[in-house]
Amino acid sequence: MSPSPEEKDPASYTDLNAQVAALTAERDRLAADKAELYDRLLRRQADFDNFRKRTERDRSDFLQYAGMEFVREILPVLDDFERALKVESADTRYTKGVELIYSRLYEALKKMGLEPMDTVGKKFDPNLHQAVERVQTDDVPDQTILEEFQKGYNFKGRLVRPAMVKVAVKSS
Image (cartoon, rainbow, N blue to C red; front, side, top):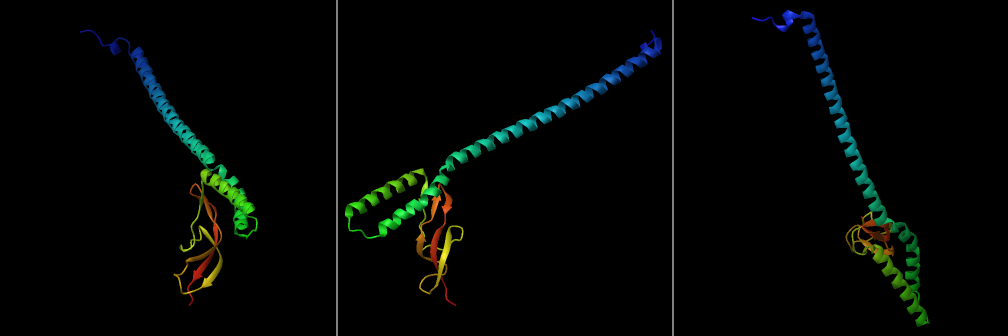
C-alpha cells in the first residue's frame, strides 16, 4: 500500500487545505458581491423605467392641458361677448357681426377642449359651483340651482372655472 498524500508531506497538505479554504471564501465573497451588484442593477433599471414613464406622463399631461391657461385667460372675453349679445341694438348688422365673432370664438375654444357646464335645475355641488346667492323656497328641492350668473367651464374634463349660481334653500 502506498502512503496517502498527507502521510508523504503533511505540511504541504495543510497548505493546500488552507489555499482551498481561502479560495472558497473568496469565491463566496465574489458571488455575494455579484448578487448585490445584480440587485442594484435591477433596482436602477426599475427606477429609470419608472422615471421614464413618469416623465412621459408629465409631458403628455402638459401637452394635453397646455391650452388650459390660455382658455382661462380668454373666458372673460367670451363672457363679454355673451353680455354684448344680451343688449338690444338697433343695428342688426352690428348684432349679427358680434354673434358671428362670438360663435367662431366659442367653437374654436370647444375644439380645443372647452366644455360648458349645464347648471340650472341641477343639484348644487361646491366643487363645481360657486353659490353667489341663496334663496329660501319650497317650490324646488333643497340645494337646486335656480339661476346661473356666470357660466362654468371644464377643459378636457378638468374644472377651469366654477359656475356662479343662485341656489334654493329649504325654508325652515
